[in-house]
Length: 487
Image 1 (cartoon, helix red, strand yellow):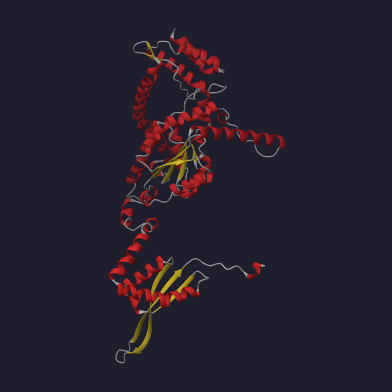
Image 2 (image 1 turned 60 degrees about the vertical axis):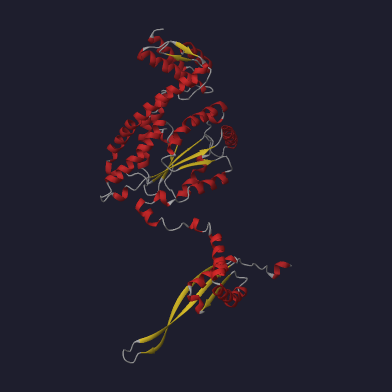
């Protein structure tokens, strides 16, 4: 078949409006031998038509379609491969494409960054310090749980949705022509959106990265932010280029839950729109085609699975939060809040963190407190029995009576001038015994100075110092029911 005829037929395959017609064109062309760049272009267009056939009604050349029933043509030997060889051949092709994409990622990112830098100027390339890159399976609840993530991190910038960034008239025109939006255009739009944010409070990006090239661009973007920081570190602008903090968050649900959630969402939207049309009150919601067709939903999930391996590579570089989003909204929200707790090692500068990292964390200091408490009491009882007895007598004589007196309030303040409390070992025993008994105790040593006499020679006032030890003892409060409520 002549090249021109082949190209014309392949273009017609992309414009067919019914699945049956497109299939007939696809099967009639996909097996033909191809040589030369024009033939290769035509064959690729035909294959693109085959991928488009996953749509339910209208043909969408952007929709991926995969099947194991199609034969794969081997251009070198002019032999059709058996179905058993399809997986191996396809995997080899994908590996070759992946290598070339990684090589091109640097060129793509550098050009996109240069385009944006030409608009703003290098000194104004001030990006948010913290960026959360949110991805997830279809129906995993990214939109539902985004507010919880923003709250956990104290982010007030509105989230950046890649689907919104790619809905500009220019991008829509490309999609209407059946053309893919290039990774360079995606990265460039993203950089513009990041520069529009308040850089001090961080931002969440929903839907990036989605491909091998975009994953590599994300790594390059992180390196570029470090490069800017080094460049402006010793200038008056250094505060505008902090150390970047990237977090990768992936919400995961299995395929069946993804399908059921999206179909349910589609039904609810339809019911809502019916009520709005009948009552004339409310606003019509958008009815997504992908929320009403199980085949399309599964195709979307397959795309997520295909790209998931790319995301896993980021787990070796950045903090990676894989969140099981199968449970209820509240349970998933609790998991998110736990995952995004403050982590000083990720957010502080290296020198700052190294200076304070030896101080124990509040969340960790009490992990072995009970075991340490028992060990201290056993040690003092065996090695210092006399000191231990003094501490017990002090509690019996001065602390317990005050606790009993304030039993209802749940708090007792014990002041004492007993000299045994000047011994730190006795104080440790007293606090340990009370803690073992279930009381929460804090102690304060206050020094009171009282004028006693005046030195006749120097007229200096001689002061007498006395120590007043205050123990604040807290315990569960006892609630008493008012008498009138009993009748």
